[in-house]
Length: 423
Ligand code: UD1
Image (cartoon, rainbow, N blue to C red):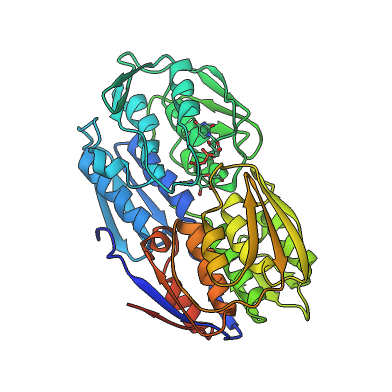
């Protein structure tokens, strides 16, 4: 598979009114967890609707380094065979590239009795501890120790099902424990589990591989351990954050966009906030049309675990609210460092201030082009969205952050009428 992308720069000319149709790619976060789950079997698992994004490339590199065979027989299909996994200590540089890489730990301990991994990387959007993951493995009988920068988990006799209460409903923590539990002896119940759609997608894949997972999507997930899991073919759901990003793009540009393959049933919070802003949102089973209203009204929101408004849509929505007529208050309740976008939007003329976990946005503020950076993936999305509305040209550096989760963002925006170039 292709390796990491080159860094680059976007030059975006503001003022285009977005019109037309755009198709949402498969969920990047669901695909990352699904690829890790493939290590639970020695048979091939085929994943469809996998987005062509760089986080998938770097996870593929990690799985390959562990001994798995990873192929991309079609642009949106990834096939993983975990039969050859024989390296149980992950190379530091491959783990620290993204957050999802730590999710190989559950499958490795469950199937091989040992895993040694450094703490994961990912966006610098908060402290991002991994205590929930480790606590879950320990409750299932693993012995956890620190060896230099590595976390080591040992369970030579296999894991045993347990009742595990996690302090915070961590998405990747819930997924990691579910994967470990799928090959443990007996039943595991995760209490205070994350309910995100990506957890549900993982449960569906595990069940397709022969596992018995019940309750995914609720705060109590039960997993009955099996002796082995088999291969499967599984289609990933569409990316709800990408869909939300295009919905905001339509609204901030004064446009009218049909978003195809939209995960309509899991974006209630977003739709509710867009309507409160004055946008028209029409939804069918798998498509959403978003049309900007005459005026944008201010809206306050909190970023929360699902089904609350996704923290990954906090920064994109903040960009939209810079154009609303009045004051909006945003409260971030998931991560402790989500505000990196604030300084960049201010350089474009936005009237926005952050105080701790809150941001106050006053609008409408005329935005102008500037030379900016994508500081993390969603902060980068916020800057790009603001650039659609800014007078003149905006130059955005470090777009590798956007490449981590967004597939062909420039091509998709270009097809909707945006003048955007990648240098
Ligand atoms: C995943 C998503 C990310 C999204 C986030 C929340 C992936 C690859 N990334 O990240 O895009 O923004 O869910 O929807 O799927 N926490 C603990 N202990 C832990 C783990 C987490 O306290 O062991 C806390 C974190 O500090 C944070 C909160 O839980 O405040 C949410 O983190 P978590 O749900 O784990 O996010 P990720 O799975 O890292």
